[in-house]
Image (cartoon, rainbow, N blue to C red):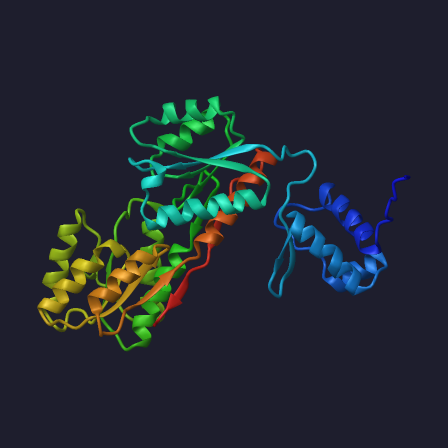
Length: 352
């Protein structure tokens, strides 16, 4: 019996043309396609047909539908090895399956973003390895690129020496491609929130002023004070190390009821001690906290405050961080000579 070959529908034929466009050099990862109306005009079909064609490409993983934004390109184009391997290096002494909640969420989102772009990814925890040993391990795996989530400056140096494309996340350097949360804006939002709530003497508690991130967070705080017409006071900047010294500095300031009436906490791990101290001594301070990307911190604070109002805080979307990192790494793999850049992930203020 002769085999019956079904002719392709108009939607399938149009999907073939769209797919060919995506696999050519006309679009890049992360690009937003033209609107359905424009695509329908371009391919001379109805909007219903183009919508069906796009749905096929969504199912195949070539594009993803974004709410009210259209369709975003996800698959690599021709010339890119779809089976290429990338690595996610963590600057932790523990194995990747023993990570804290935030690190685990970041790794999970990196996996999802990599998979959606047709890439394979594996995690490599620093543990007790040196930077050169990490680099050697990655070369053995023949990775095409690396996302580095570690503060150890030797790791990116070794990767650069070996010519392995890399993107840093959660840290910044003017000489390295990086994706970071918007530190300046986050600190500005927290400080401005306290100003809007009537605070006049606002203290800042943070750390790592030797790093770009720490300087940016302090800069956001100082900028918000300046714009509000409030003077900054050096004694209100609590940034000494270790953390016990920070708490002692806060105790000295809070003993004088006129010294401070608001506190921006840029290091959320201190929130438990701060809340305990304020509660035990019946001291009222308006707080604003850097939640970061870790949901555990806010949960801890909720338990500490119980029936009291939970402080306002800023956080970022870990999914945005991971997706941006994968996109930037893909760009560096394609074009290693591209100028170094830094991508900022937006911070969101939560007041409830």
